Length: 290
Length: 290
Image 1 (cartoon, rainbow over the protein chains, first blue to last red):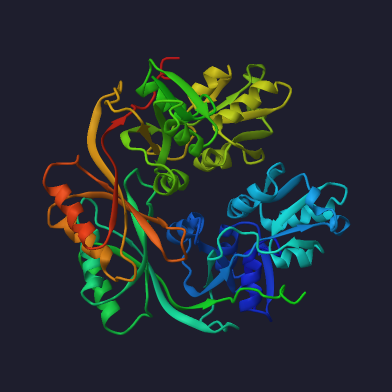
Image 2: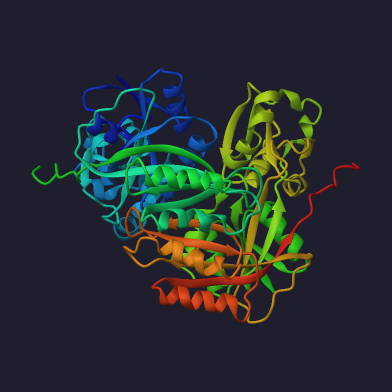
């Protein structure tokens, strides 16, 4: 089996793939659409892409591409704790406090804002296309007084020394990754399933005020619990939206199908993206001993 | 009166400010938070920042900052048609078809994707921090075979020749800008008001399934029409959200206040961001004659 993931190597997406599918061949792609197209074109069997971060919110490109461009089921969700570390080239392991520039993805820089403000008020902050790209740059420039903010996998891959662990400001930060598949069989995941979910996208009938209230009523009186509802532009004009809804249960044989049928009868279009298990990676504690 | 806006000069935000407030002093700021802070600190009286684009969706930084960081009322909305043009240095006005690189903001490049794919399949595309920054770069490098995608104001400011007009793929694309104010008096706008709106942010009681359905019920049975509902992370953990709601009417004396009081009694927190008029800029037709 082959898996596409949002690269380069040693990103958080790579960590999600390695943990969930430790024994399969993985291939990095440079964009989220490229990952999805690779599954559609059967270059790979599955793709792992980010869907939502606890601080930044949804990854709009993933949601929009699933709605507008591809027809791929979500078969699993992997929740990864986002742990950011400060790392330098080994040549600077002892004088790392003198770094003049710190590189990382804009989200990682934002996630460590308080730490950077406190510890490196005078360092220049430079954005890179990924946390792994920052680590790679640092590994290739031992002559520069620079550090990268990235994850443990990046430190290992680029042989950097982690000099400060867990420098992110909020310990609750997690990212949801989804697994998209073109297989007709179930995908085996090397983690314990925690909860079950169903995700659907829906479009309301035009110009009918209160249609969203009707949709929520169809779920509410059946005690079907929604964990998320979010709107995204239909790309047909300002004020036209579709909705993405997460439901806290697997597809059943009566209540959810009936709710969906009724919602469709009211003039809505419903696309069920998947009914799947959610898996969580435990926080890494590999540092505590060494 | 002084207005802050998301700069640099000749961006779409600048166009919104110039059209709505043609006679006041304007000052560009480089980030959305900087614009808002300038109003809070009374460096300026009002700020104009983007809130939502018909293709890209909401500007998360604007929504998040209004919820988490500042306490500023929305006093008006300005809707601007997004018209993108291809422009070159005057030295290249006759051989512009030979440009090797095209620069613009990533959103503008995305908005002209089909045009670029058709007309310039071999040109390199390079991202800049704004459409105006692309125009400035082109104006400063007559020796390079490059073009910028930007608006009419940028072409005028940087004395570039517009060689292809309206190259954006979708003609319905608009951006909503909001006006934030620290004035106790009304802000005068040099455009015709089109509709009235009320925008509020709300947080649901924790762990009460169906609370959003209750909120929508309070609006629905009163025939209060919502034009938008969107969720954003509360930044307290995956799955915790606040909602931003647009209502198609001004604050009245009975129905909306009662709905809000009842929603608050149900355990929700409601923050009314503003009750204001919406203004629309007509599409520019200044090109048709010349």
